[in-house]
Amino acid sequence: MSDADFTPEKQKEYLDKLILSFVENGKNINEVLAMPYHFVVEILHEKNKPRKEKSLIAAFGG
Image 1 (cartoon, rainbow, N blue to C red):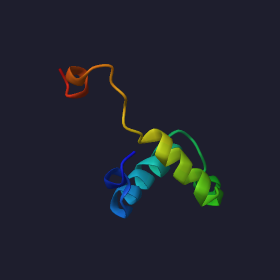
Image 2: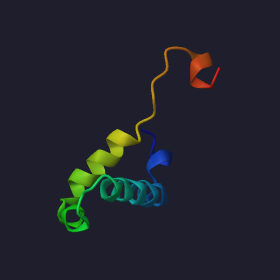
Image 3: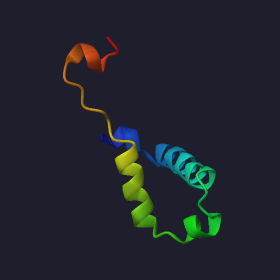
Image 4: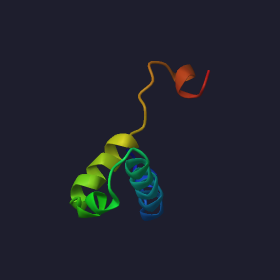
């Protein structure tokens, strides 16, 4: 992941989406808030990794 993809603004956006997805999938908000921050950041990195495409055409939506 490039640094531009994980700026503080993007981290906040990704974190908001992640927490909402936890709650929507039945996780208690208190459990989410009790999670270690480093663990949540690792999940963010995994969920927001750039996809590796097999060809340049596929990478650009072709």
